[in-house]
Length: 322
Ligand code: RIB
Ligand code: CA
Image 1 (tube, rainbow, N blue to C red):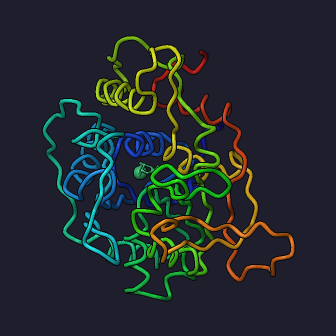
Image 2 (image 1 turned 120 degrees about the horizontal axis):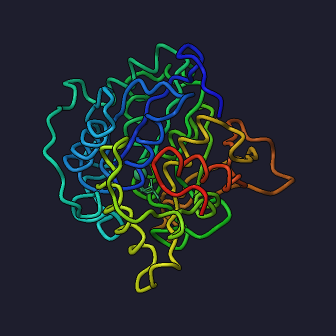
């Protein structure tokens, strides 16, 4: 990847629910020669909002970079109920690793207000790797915002494959389906990086390095512990050597940085809201005879996994020549 000058970097805001793969995504983005991370907003999801915000502040601190963090939604648009993902991310959201004290604080401005004002400047891509609640709230504050956002890259959805929370629903969409449908219908250009492609972009045991110290990465020890937890969660009972885990959120960052890392097709996408059996399903209209959608979503249907994995491992200190 060729280094580029700061002026050529794509300005982005990350919207996260840190979470192990969100932490990886933050470190991947902050090490990018092509992205300018202007701010990070937090949402409930992999843990409650206090946990995901604390983990986001910690991930930024351990990166050695200074990026403002804005605390966001504590519950979905339509209900106060929150189900977290402890089985995949641990009770503390980072694989139950011993976490160092966090010294920084979230900004006073709430995430939705920050998104509304920052995105209104124009030209800033949002990479959303959590429930879409914060963006939906920002659109409610400032409906004109949709025209100012060049693209939202969403990690979420399952177009032509099973879900991961229910048979048909992926976690980020299922966790706030009303917000997701609102964003998909908003007219903002959306790239949907769903399970169709993130399940093809997997870290394996062969990428892991023994030992966890790395003078270039203060987060190395935490990353090693969290990755081991994540591997076990995705491969219960499997022996070390045969395991793999999907890099959901880092792949969304990679697609924002370099859209050619995924192949996309434009489809009409609606989110199922009514029936408990299908709630949170991304309903993709793949019929050739369907009328052209008013606001097509660019659905990722293919990924250059070797290229992505090589760069991911290089940036985060995994073995990239397994
Ligand atoms: O379904 C995977 C997604 O849900 C990832 O963003 C993960 O971090 C969780 O938020
Ligand atoms: Ca996430």
